[in-house]
Image 1 (spheres, one colour):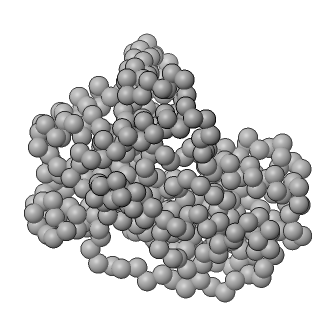
Image 2 (cartoon, helix red, strand yellow):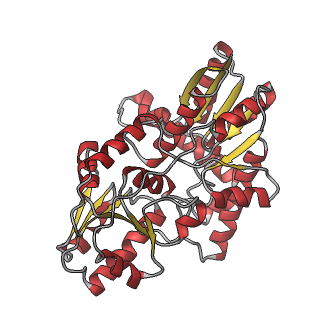
Image 3 (tube, helix red, strand yellow):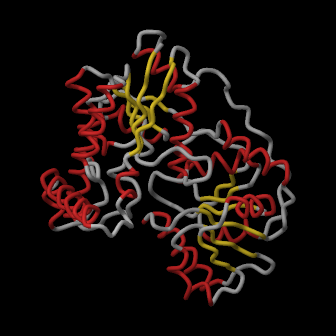
Length: 384
């Protein structure tokens, strides 16, 4: 029987953002893998939150030291950060302490295999290489390219490409690479780093919550939701463009839109001029389930980037129709209930269509997951 360590930037959660849901799927699939007796979750997020609100001297020293350590490490990796700021980091906040704690963990519980979901665990990957512990990368995205708007400044482009090179360097050192997106899978394979497509689909308690929503659905004509945090550059740009179109055109009569997710407070001024649009910000899980059970559909407004794939799968599973631009559908297999529109004119037309028929449930392959197959192949208990 094998022991596996799951290194994650955000802990798995049933009630949480898409990244936490993806990590929940990874944990679920690891626990379902034949021959795996134990999965230890090691989250780097707690090191950030542990001292975030502590005003004591020790906490202040840790925050200052961690910030300085991170800045020096990032500039050493990519000196162009001095001139152009990027979001990507192949480092862990408080990295020396994280690696130290991980050393103590593997001294007590040495794993047969590690899985990580972000290349910020590169320092631990290097440690695993020295100790002969195989590692699988099941990253949520190609993070050097994810979540940022398209750069037009040549220096910004160079800085982004240097970050991407650092990410590729980390990924090449793993024993296997699994991608949530067909686009990212193709990019890695095209560059000569073999990768497999490991799509997101709701499992376990998340699947139960979505099935409950599907059973409760009574669509209200004209009610649409825009979901997700707007702290992501790509998501924020999509909403900004939509608000601009709504202010210029006006929303169709009878349409009511609710914006749900952190960051909507930034658009309070624009939404004041759109009485048919309500900015709710973060809402409790019970409220979100109620809105989803009553919504005619969900709008996904991104036209670039690598995100929203978890949301597409979950809306399809819950029976909620989605209207989106073609871009995200290039990355996944077709899903029931997804309507793509080519431009804003077509989106406005889609808002005025009748409530659609119930969305058929997608028949999901209940066989062994791609992650389980890969784990058993590396451990020598199965075939790739």
